[in-house]
Image (spheres, rainbow, N blue to C red):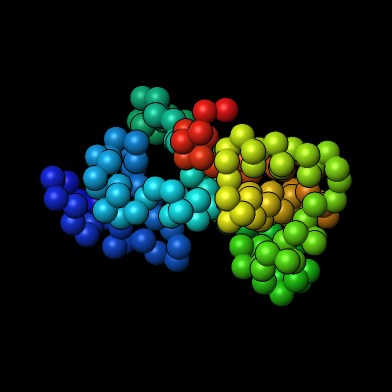
Length: 168
């Protein structure tokens, strides 16, 4: 969003390939958020929402190098996408609900954790399936054939707006 009292097209019109970066979202005026419908049903359709910690001066001045370079991260993403395409012909994010439900949960403990998170965060069916697809992607990134409890937990952690909206 551009600055000022009246919301105008700005960064939101720059979203590309499904990526919309809203810097300092909690600082936005509620009316501005409502103007772009970043609440309720729209928020739960966003796969990943998390807060990024403020950077230290050392990082800002270039004194810190990341353990993972962009090239390394890109290769991991390509490998994960290839795995998904070979297994099912589409990326996990494009799986239909029936396929997600049938293929993703493999243990009672994993299902119990997902149900608990769904209840505590008051996730809709759409939000439930987003968490499940994200957990499957996390498992794929680790080259695991099935979702484990830690994958569900990590996927739930990527839903910070749900956590902030609902007191756990």
